[in-house]
Image (cartoon, rainbow, N blue to C red; front, side, top):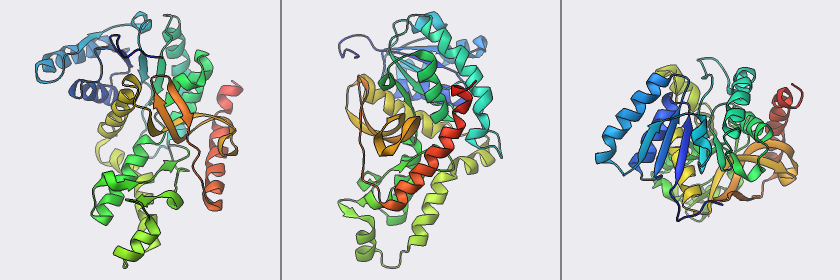
Length: 318
């Protein structure tokens, strides 16, 4: 458990677009006291540390430096954003073998420092790599967290808020499953304010159709492809999602977030990491929140899990 009274320390491994955007988010939101940047490209990491430090007078007091794996020893959180990036036309699952090999080295290096904190994994395919980090580290499952569908859920709420012309904070719904092509919206539990979405539409948006909602979900699911096609990578939104997750841990918020965590019988699933709502606190994952799914949603989640079960065979049977 992270003590609220001690100096908080976050290590960022990988200072590419996601890692550097995440570091920028941390100092702008005053989330941590200390931040260490680690990357194979040491010159860039030193440059990032210098650049971020020069912005401290405009942000929040944070001690930032370019370090190495020995700095992980007393870190509260190690966030891994390093790895091969998704290229145009590639799925997240296409990245498995090369990124698992990279992670084996990274996790071994972190653990050799004496690290005993919480891992956050953001690199894709995030569910597979969170599972790999759990296996390679030997840490309890509650202290290895994948970013899961935290971004997909944010995209879902944002696009629904645009559709209904409402404050996104009044849209309550989740995307669960693989962070990828087999993820699914939980329409049966989606609420506009306190109203089920179907009832809200029948009252206030009678011209709306299920086809409209299906198209919204498709745009959520395929958002990364559209962004990568236009600018080469996604990084701002996931960086802000990682900052939100970091804050929930360091401040012991006990927030419900759709992160990737180990299934141990929940939803009828076992021995895989997958995106579901869970309570996040200074212990890491405090508890999975098992929401009610209808028959079709349960079937879709089982399909998503089957895809991930096949994907993690590379870790179980190297």
